[in-house]
Amino acid sequence: MSFTIRNAQKSDMPLVLSLIKELAVFEKEPEAVEVTIRDLENDGFSENPSFHCFVAEVQGKIEGMALVYNRYSTWKGKALHLEDLIVSDAMRGSGIGSALLDEVVKYGHHLGVKRITWEVLNWNEPAIVFYEKKGAHVMHDWNVVHLNEKAIKNYISKL
Image (cartoon, rainbow, N blue to C red; front, side, top):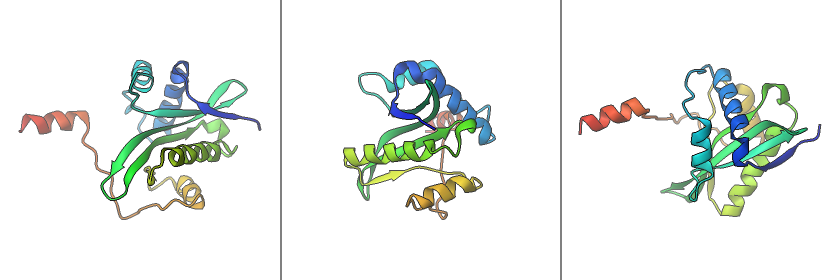
């Protein structure tokens, strides 16, 4: 199978959003996606973009994506966060996931980051095995903490 990994373009965002929604269904949270095409276009392609996105293209169709953004570690310094690496259900096992992760790691190396971080659901055993085979350390003793928009507003109202 032949595919191309490239930097996403603004015009790719409708298909990127489609992959994001496909991931939400896979992760059993189909109603959780709030981001819009307009958000992705504005946030990723402004003068100071909030993220960088790579896409995997197969015969002119986007079948995978990886979205990253800069972070800073108080222990390590410059870091990169991989928000999502998504391969369409039809293309899983084709090598696209490996190629996207390769591109993310090369990008992080080019930026001079000391660490690349991401999360994986504890029940997604194929992804955990994939990441560990690539040399990643899955930290089972850490928990992810989120304040969603409602919780942020509630928090602020109590200040």
